Image 1 (tube, rainbow, N blue to C red):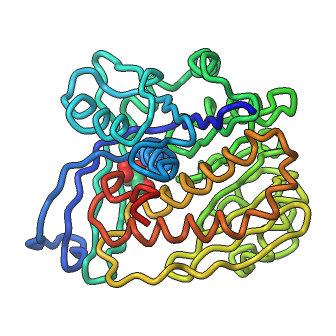
Image 2: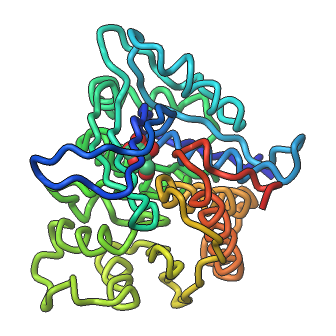
Length: 341
Ligand code: RIB
């Protein structure tokens, strides 16, 4: 059996996080509680979640995880914060380009302590765009990673054109890898069905699910307003129009919904949480934990339909990990190792 393998292709950011009792109004200056500078980026967070999910004990890593992305060489953030956290979580960093005359991507995050740790995020792409603007060059970086019967994880924080090129490649059955696509943020210019078609897993929150139905270009003739649809009505649209194999819709504090093209579906309630301090990276934790479970399954060579028997357990475990994440401050630093949960 091939060793389970995950390759995350995506963003690495430095997060400037301000914790505040409430968000200021337009034109208002407010004294906030604290500021933290920490490692983040949806791609890197998900890579860390995949890595940490694969440590059943402190010394055993069940899944190999690699990160492909780009950072600025002229600022201290990669060496000081991002690389140590990735490597300490069992993630290979050899596919991360360090770009001269570029800034590492950044996110300015406001965490509203008065609203249950809810966040607002402003993302500046920096090297995530300039270093990832060529799909062929990105694919060349993946050639040393054995992705046949492996899992590729992507989000929306690298250029759209690169993302579409990579989706076409990884969704081609000849490629024999499984793509998990988390459209966060959703590209405003939309996604053609030809790129989405055959995606193994489409993982979204409720807002992203509605936006995806609107922005998948050939969905535009849908008969009804999709914002009124429930998860169990949204998911079949992706199965029917784009042959997406598994749809995951996270529902925040309520839990998560899943649906497979073979007809299995279910709601898994969220795990109990004492106090939510920061919801940043909860979605990334969910995606990474699910990816690790899927990687172990697809490495056996069994057809994806067989994962129906394990999907409920995989979603439950991803929910428990996300519940662990929201009880700690920060993005990737708040993601639990599997042996902690
Ligand atoms: O999903 C959370 C992440 O989104 C943060 O770490 C931030 O970098 C933004 O990209």
